[in-house]
Image 1 (cartoon, helix red, strand yellow):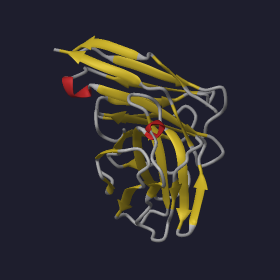
Image 2 (tube, rainbow over the protein chains, first blue to last red):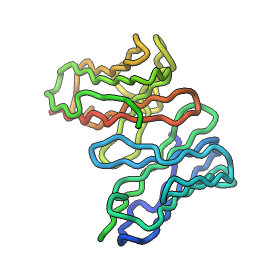
Image 3 (cartoon, each protein chain N blue to C red):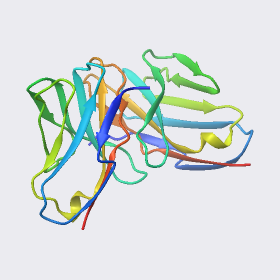
Length: 110
Length: 112
């Protein structure tokens, strides 16, 4: 089935550093969503994007809907230990179904 | 935070047993979904419902079945559990088509 390519697969950074991750698709999406999942819990919605070129922030998090509608980016500024977790992108095309990325595992060291 | 609840959180059970995973939401959402997720991997849609008495299969083939008799309740059933069913099962709901989905904390299922 359709799959989103998410990179990087893993990141090991020091507290205070900025983080960037992205998702790319072979097909056009109308919606991009970014979720964070902590161990043993369900994904929690971070940011939702609905228009090409849209740039949206949620605290230290900023996400962008790529102008080609085939990619999206998530940036985290000044990382802190509680940012640790798995970040998933999800895209939606012309149907209601969400396609999830493979996840970016973030580890933050003090 | 979304009010969507899944029980049990963890279940370890023997092969051949019938299992029902519960999912309830208190937000009156019409749209509900079940995903299967292996540890640390992407989520795969296995069932969804757009309202009472409406159920559809998702993109990933699953031997499980679902029902939607009440808006707030969307249980998933495995008639005869097998080790290949071992996984995490996540339930989600949304207020409408093309709206973000909000997830429960999942049921981690282990079949011995």
